[in-house]
Length: 440
Ligand code: ASP
Image (cartoon, rainbow, N blue to C red; front, side, top):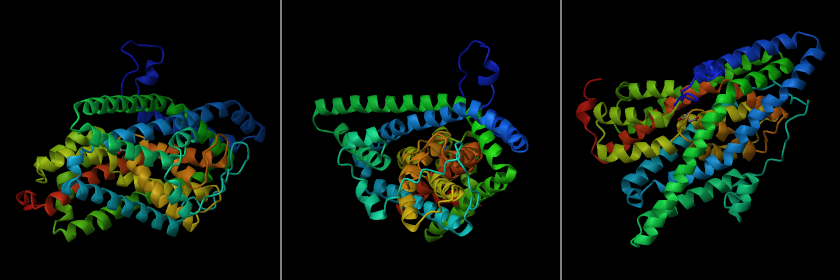
């Protein structure tokens, strides 16, 4: 979590020492104030501001883009390889089906609600260079499906084609997990070594993400100031609207998704929420599923009666791959961005988001801000490229500016979903301690 840059007091310690979330919020608010002031001042002043500060915003976008491919590749191999083949048995399959099914439900809720309510519609965001978003032509749904299987994984990596990378990394990881259990000792040792290397690589990437986030307050300040300078204060309303919409979808998912499945299994939703609340609050404030894992393990066992045999393997997997809140965020905010740049989603693009949103949620690491990086790949998959200076980058920056707020809600749901998964699987196996459920 928030680490100090170093033990000694450097001249920037006032910056690095302050809470990151607070710094980002300050960047956002200052950016909005400066941007609004510029919007009301002489056009030359705004242009000069953009000319001299654009570099700092673009730098942030480039830093984020730099990390996407390595993060997805390494964390998915590590994630895939950490599912032991033995656990791919009945309980494992049930758990994975639950996580996958609920993620699809989550993306669908996000898509349906944002189709009905059209966040960002009519915003008409322009790029810093006045360019409309690069509308790389969106491929059809069948092509998207076929293109998931890379004919040349190395080429996909080099080009940054995220879907084939995800596919390849996942099967690489699963194959590696089989090798880790091989009867041949040499193979086993080699697989363990490779696993260690990949896991270490993934950790290095998270460390870099952490470092990049130190720059986020400055990046957010500049990007938001430019957006407001160009678009004026009229963008505040849509941002409040999209935040509200994400939270409404999260709440709907609790009642429709969790409420529905719990009713099927004869369990009370409110007893569940009461039992899970400590983990939910921790997730909300830490914005990290991984950091919340110890609490999730504890409440599942102590408050909700999940046996350790299930929670100890299903919760860590859940904290890595099950991101239902992230799925909602990806679908709602991708729709917002598409609308904001004046390219509302087609049905094919929505189907594509169903896949990429699901995979993006699976690929997102359980650390703060991971979902925002996955957003880049979801946008890419529907032909909206986040290129420095483009309208899409400007709209993305708006979402990035409020990411901390959205991350709190989505992480809370991610963790709630993990715990719900182990409860349902335990109940279906007849091993849930129902005495914990007697008193609400
Ligand atoms: N922060 C989220 C989590 O840890 C991931 C995300 O950014 O969507 O679950």
